[in-house]
Length: 224
Image 1 (tube, rainbow, N blue to C red):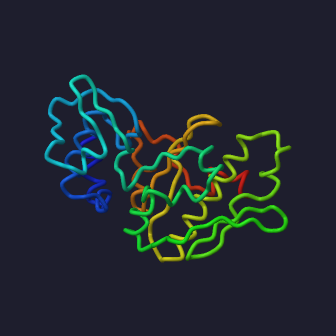
Image 2: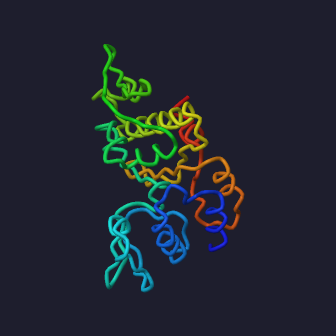
């Protein structure tokens, strides 16, 4: 794992993170033998001292019995999204700087986000960049039987929207699906450039490759 993290650091994997936070992130990754760590409880790290970093204190809590992550790590690369919440309020994706701080690092500034419904019932997100169709009317009807499909449609279109925005800004970064926890659960996406994505695809001994698929490929049946 140490060699994997060294290669990722060379590729710029931690370039968006606060420098003082990087050693702490790497320690947690090494201790759990995992590049990606989502919110939740982990074994306590006796060697982890986060008291010197106010940023680390906002991301994790190291008690006498366990380590608890408030955010996925690395915070500028890994994002866990609740599909139901996203369906109920699509602008959520841009709130609380959850994704926006990372987008800014890629040269993308999003503001003035709003929803718009046309006469046919299609739902759009309006941003300072462009207007995007987020939920076609057939997936908003109360008579739609598969509510979980509705959630996935909105998630798929929002992540595709983010990749379009990144591409239009000439960024080399894209969002990829890491994993999806059941049809009604959390979906975790990661932000990588093409070199990082190829590294993960080519590292055969990396046990946690999960899905790590392009948005268009993972949601092919929904977006086609």
